[in-house]
Length: 230
Ligand SMILES: *[C@@H]1O[C@H](CO)[C@@H](O)[C@H](O)[C@H]1NC(C)=O
Image 1 (tube, rainbow, N blue to C red):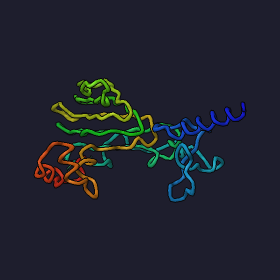
Image 2 (tube, rainbow, N blue to C red):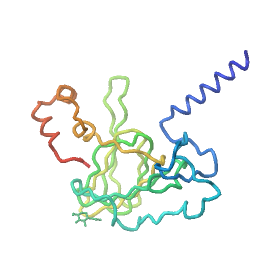
Image 3 (cartoon, rainbow, N blue to C red):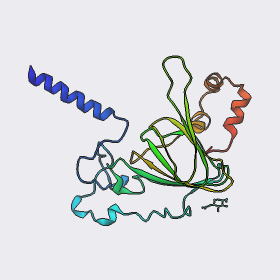
Image 4 (cartoon, rainbow, N blue to C red):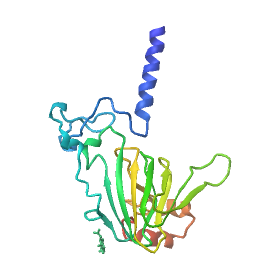
């Protein structure tokens, strides 16, 4: 009887750990990722590990080019250049629950509404003036979702809780430089605009007109805008 109870507790614990949306703790000192194409099996908490005997210091090092925006993803439509170093670029991050990014904003540059489904994010402003905010999940008591926002100056930090919708907007007259750290090796990026209006195939007009209480013409217009929105 006792062992049956023990077995169900162990099973529940296992299920709970599989159901976690955020990164698991590492189960060993390190687990340098091998490229997806070479991996037959993924580790539960990340990618398959390189043979530890073949791991060397280079596996924990990345010439990230974080001193400059050059070589980043240039999103001219929203006025910013971004560099993200997650486990896909930096295999040593595998199972560490960490990643890091750099964002260079032009004046009025905007990271539109988005979420990271697998990681909280802390941002740190080095240059410029950045309006940031996140919105709470739907409250149960009939109140409105709450916006938590700040205007950040050099030296300021702000945290976006995992999964919540947030944005960053350069409200200064100069460029802005922001670094971001994530509590996931692969935080993911969900753009609200792309999810609603840029999916392939598109979500049906009926769903979108009802969901946003908009005319079909407005939905057509939003769907016709250049992809990606960010
Ligand atoms: C991004 O693109 C804009 C427009 O083409 C260009 O002026 C800017 O120099 C580019 N920035 C980087 C870092 O590549």
